Image 1 (cartoon, rainbow, N blue to C red):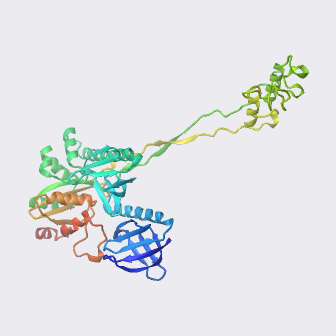
Image 2 (image 1 turned 180 degrees about the horizontal axis):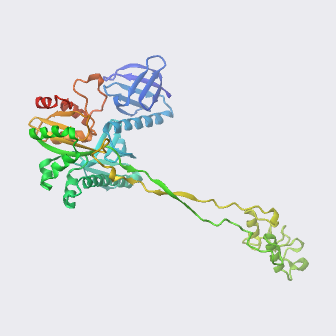
Image 3 (image 1 turned 180 degrees about the vertical axis):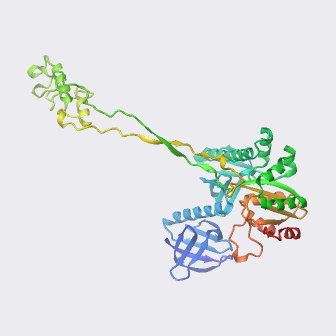
Length: 491
């Protein structure tokens, strides 16, 4: 928690309360605790926007229009704003029912700073005014020019993202990779479901049945006469077959599949490997068989003896006179050398002192064992990837949702085929493209069921958008019981 000066503003901009309070952005809600007053707890689903305003102020706007202004935060302002954005992004991802783990980037969209989250099935653009989902099923192309990324999306204006800086290429590559993987999963799922379908026909069907997109049965039968019936037969629960048959009698069906669980696999270690490095053993190569002792003492004595001859005092060990184990002696006995017997350029026995620095001495008994090179042992990793065999529409926990949309003159019916619990949703059909409108709203809302009409305070808070579109079009929800057929006919 951090201390701040707060003001509560009405939707009209009038201040209704102000003072000093403790504020925190926890995992469940944004909490304002005044020093004198009641605690204000705001679930993140009730926040419509949050951003920085003038004079280092944070403005948090609630769904009903109330504004919370926070100032005098000092250095905690940036941290609090970052926590708010993270929690709002997580809430938006939950509401949008995105799949997988996100790659995160920062960018500029429509002149505002946003956070980009690339998931397995969608790009989520999280800004101060809310979140927008760009579903991969409707993305046509991704292009990069002059550090600006342009995403072409069916049914809407292109998404233009700038100020990615040196991460522009990284973002574009991540987006293209996720797009390619999403299309590959659709093809792999259909290939496992329909092993007898011709590869070219499978390619055509996978291009139409992109993640969450419903395709009319007549279009699928144009690829193969039995394709639509086979897809329904292989994915529908036995208890739902009668319902689907009745819907087929009343309306034209469109079939779709939507991935609801990630099949990504993390990298895993399998067998260890070891770097068989030779342990350093400098000073242990010599034998005792020569005239000089082993180790660097013997090396030094041999070097001294090899320098016998005219020049230095006492037999000419060098130019250092009585000092003399080298041209300069240990104490610079002559003009030819410097300290420690080094000549210009660190010649002669300069190497000896380098070995001494590594721990080797003239007396073998005092020479300590050199540090052994570390044993570099690692686990070999199986790279991260995808378990395509986990894509299935059958079983108790399917990873792919199978559904149909039935279009009548004034209704669009949404029926899930491979889950027993969800009710049949009936939406009002307005216009010739009503089925496409409902399908797009379902995809962009993550196939989350809209609150039933009249749910009131019991309905969860949801941001305005595609979920709001579904709620406005929803006519009713029919449970699968003995009255299902009569209720569907009535609606």
